[in-house]
Image (tube, rainbow, N blue to C red; front, side):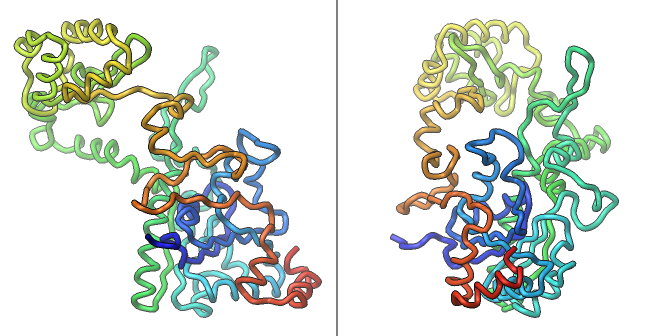
Length: 409
């Protein structure tokens, strides 16, 4: 069994504020030494959004867990020299704010590659380094509205508002960014040459929602070239999941105590279901085609299925699905998913007693190894002395000198 986490040999210097700090969270979960360099006033993510737990935001507890915090006033040349020293013994620098923020202090990629030719430099921003929106200030939901993920809603008084939705840009960017950073490190270790990469959270949101945008692009082509699928007689449905509304064999249904998702779009699954509920007549009357047949628009069948599904509880339908090899899924909410037995089996919840907030652990499991257990998100500058002593080897006198010069704030 490995005795150290998979990324224990990786050191990341992170200069971030707010949500883009998420790019390094998974790296820290996997054992990377992530040193968060903060201004003396600190990243105000600790006060942003809600809930606030004992004076600190859940967002900070989650995004900055497992990281070390050191304060450096980069307006001070002594502090900038410390930054360069950190980069000399690091693999990655993540600039998670406006592109060029570090370059203004003489710490951009071109400067730092002189210090460490193998450095992988990743700058993360809202709209990226190019394009007409590059200088626009923004927050996380902007990338969801920009990419077409959020549909405006209206309240009873006619005011437009942001509806509840899954935040995509702020969550997709770390997946693409983390993958690219590790790819850069692998190549740097092979070749001795680092690289400069940039990531826009807006781009990540659009890439994550590729199926809808690519479907629209496909449908813009002639109808004799791009069609629907065979089970719909090649007629075009509305784009992506919008085309699920009229489905019947692939649809949400009320159970006796909640809801289930029924997914018998393959003919074999549909037959299994009909046999299991003692209604083989339904299969004989509406056999469907072999694959992807949702019995679209069949209200007569939908009414029958509605009554059938109301006759059993969600738990009974899940057991039925296993017994009769029929795809049926529970319909949870963000509030109750923690009570789902599959969730309880799969997820290790990081407890608030140790981590400040109850949080979901890293979802990928390394078989035969303990699950990641990151340290609590740091207070501002909590590890300044420890990093200067342990990473850079500065003695007490050197640290005191830096303080006297104002390098540490």
